[in-house]
Image (cartoon, rainbow, N blue to C red; front, side, top):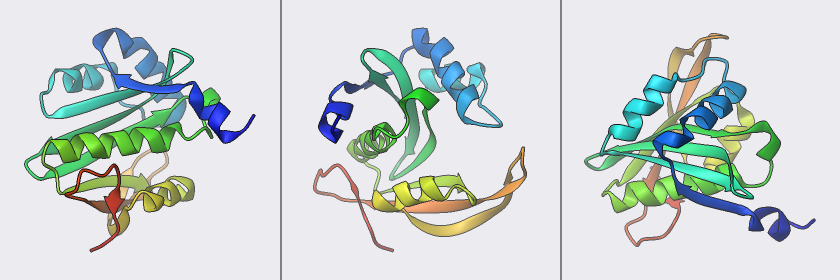
Length: 165
């Protein structure tokens, strides 16, 4: 199966409250300290937050969560179910999140990522994020520093971030 075949069955859509059981399932499979269902319930009610789901053959297999306040956005969470990884869905979700943030007026987007998560950092760099700082002991289970990354968003309506300071 070539890359086009692998991604042709992937689709993006907005998340809804009836997605919560699957969101929690993916979250628990993806993180050692998963967000609680109540966190997602609250985020679904917020008007400044975009929750985007990724489906594979119609089944929810990933999501991103981004909130935008004035001209800054934060990519708070991205997760892909183990069975759907390595198909480009994570990148699709981040690109969609950046487009939404930009449409809301964001000029830059921040995120935190585990210092040991070289794969995610590589993906984020490829999408225009650069490291701008470290949050010491940010993560628990295991305790680990977070790398803070920032992407400057283009003003021309494109679907990716620019690399720059």
